[in-house]
Image (cartoon, rainbow, N blue to C red; front, side, top):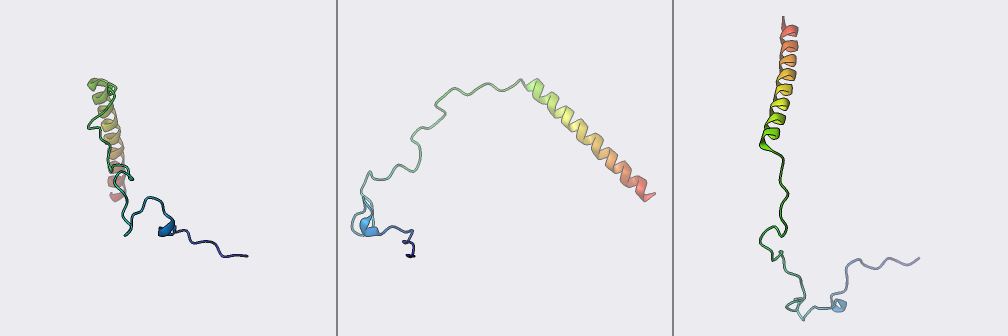
Length: 78
């Protein structure tokens, strides 16, 4: 059985490298996209009234659960 080859490529066989290990200009892609904003129109979100209704429902549920646990703890302490 032979030993596996090293996973690192030999720099002498790597295409596009100049002497010293640098790359030629234009060989690598730019680091960031050249667009400065969204290229497509963003979809509209739901109405703010529906959002506030969801916030109120979630808040009321949390408050009821919190009151239940506070009442349970107070009942244990008596």
